[in-house]
Image (tube, rainbow, N blue to C red):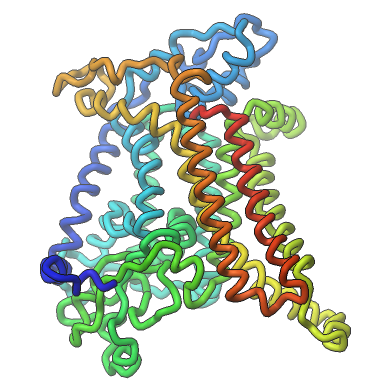
Length: 557
């Protein structure tokens, strides 16, 4: 459905999208918010005094906890993961007494950490699941860098500032895989330096500065939004998982008109609009994953042939037009990262991490890089093995003579490529709803417990015991960490997580059923066995992931 053509509201939407200042206005509020995050993070400093940062948890038996366990396992100053693990340990070992410092951490928070890690880092995934790249439309990082690159806030200028280099063709072939690598590395940095879990505004501010600086440098070196399209860590998540929802996108009303267009102003820029920052041609029907919803093509098209379309949920999962290998790999490795974030909150993981530390003395922080990257890549490998298993159960439609010929090295390589294209990619797409549900479920307890702190930090943005608007000491924001226990709010959180995982699993089962019938049935010599194996593949992933949440008991991860 083209939103600009719906009765009554369509004309208003058309006028808004045609307005040159529109994109600036939708980015501006987020821009101001994140500059406030930056200022409160850097100026606000560290939440806890240095003297108590390593005393977040006080054990009754010192032999049961080393300094490394306190600083690594429980975090340097308390945080989402810290609170979860601390309460979990308390439930398992009642004899261990907790210092009030851990609770005090949550009554003195900073605007930067609350907004960044407990509000934005939770809600952005819901936005992604609903409208795909909705966040890209209002992103303050790319938005600020683009303003500098263009030398204008909203006016159309002919020349951009910077070198305006093209992204190397050799890297274009890899699609969004560089952003997948960036997502894996950035998540490790956040975990390794305890940025979110430490509730440390200063390191949060430094991280925001680093991201803004990287985006700005990339915009000044390369043309358009090269950073956003190929290197932004969030692209690794938005591109595959954003296909679940309505998948809003600008594309052509009449594709034949686009194909015969002599000017291609949507791609090259026109009088009223810039060239597409994302290199996403509106005449391309094969993908909805790379449209940043900036509306430049809508403004630039001289033939009024571009509309803002939404489609039924799962359309881009079941029938995307063209499936992409880089999207499938992004999903698999992204699932590995999400799995680590869940496993990371279990008690047995700490024993594994400390055992690895004792055998790798050159790593002294938590988590050990070996288990982080090991879990990420092991998860991806297990998913890959599961897909190979489905393929083997489904059988082959190759003739015996053809199969014999394919025993040569060259032919084997061709078979592997065909397996990836014909089986790994579509089966990975079918798991998109389940992985999306996993990511949302992972953030649910953190959001439920800590989001009331927003009311507090509005009045005390720098964590200095201010009370500007009289909301810093309201009862709703003074609930202590101990109330988030296996018999309290966490029980509700676990129930919500399991419901989310159940819905995600059911939706992925439906997607798998449709994809198998449409694309894989004709490739199977044992279609019934293959269909059953594909559904079991989804059920196993959903069951194992849900089991991890049982292990955590509904606590924040």
